[in-house]
Length: 236
Image 1 (cartoon, rainbow, N blue to C red):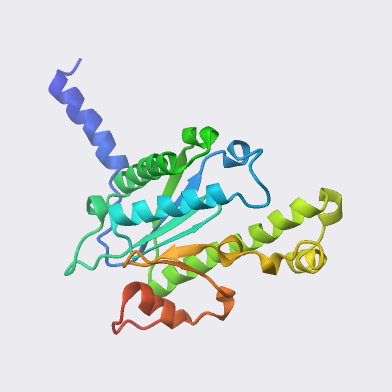
Image 2 (image 1 turned 90 degrees about the vertical axis):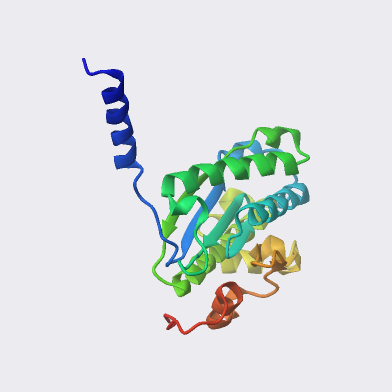
């Protein structure tokens, strides 16, 4: 049997080998936080949207922004998306860009902040998971935000639809058709922009709602809003 030092070195070697991924911050890093088993935890809350839940998620997003200083934070439903970008000459990513450290600490911090923010007893046991990945350009970081925005819009329409119609009535019906069905019953367009499209915090910690469909947003302006001006060629 090897001595204790050899055993420790061997175990640490396994750890280093499997936790070696890190990013230098020269490309944007996206971290997505998602509530674990929230479908069950939120059962019985106000439908289609519970303002207490929305408030807790916004507070959690703001506290994460304060603690980790991301480029932007976007929140919708039980999900938070964060973007980090730290060119070497300016700063560095949290925890030196170590993937496993960033992933585990963000999940823990999000869980902690949400539990402190919520007034709903059953959600004080909530947990969040996290996944982080690097994207090649600032443009793709904004595209990731757009991807989550589209998911938010779809889920928002479905939530209002399911609140007003049966599963059978909605089977095989597109989101656009559900919006039409809701007119005169419970118009989706009359819900607030945060409930329809989500919202985000920029680096100055200003919370902004998408007041209109992001499909009409200027891609280059969003890149400048989040990352500032530089000479990078923007992907189309």
